[in-house]
Length: 119
Image (cartoon, rainbow, N blue to C red; front, side, top):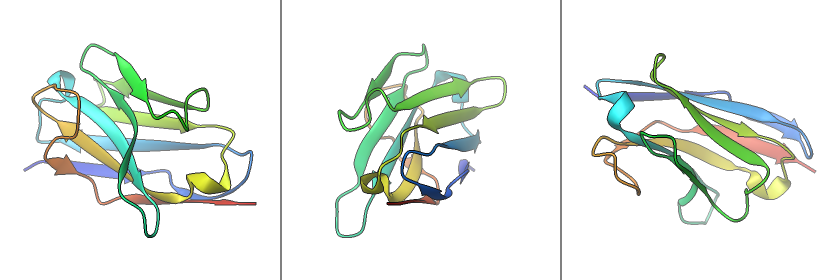
């Protein structure tokens, strides 16, 4: 059974930082592409950042230079370091796994973690 468990969300003031973690189990993590998505109220879910099995990364334009995605294959965990947070970053953040190692969302999602940035 595939499980993706996010942690690290919370309330932070604008300009602050948070680090999200997503622990994966039940998949071949080292071969999987992983991604972070977010969904704000009334908006569609959107890609924030992705990382392939060989470490290539891509980012939404809105977070480039502020967010960093990384992975630790030994711990089956993917991270999202978020710096210089803005109120518009407020959303539920979801971890996604694509066991085929392809870019783009796979079939597996975490439960989501709330990130709230106050102005």
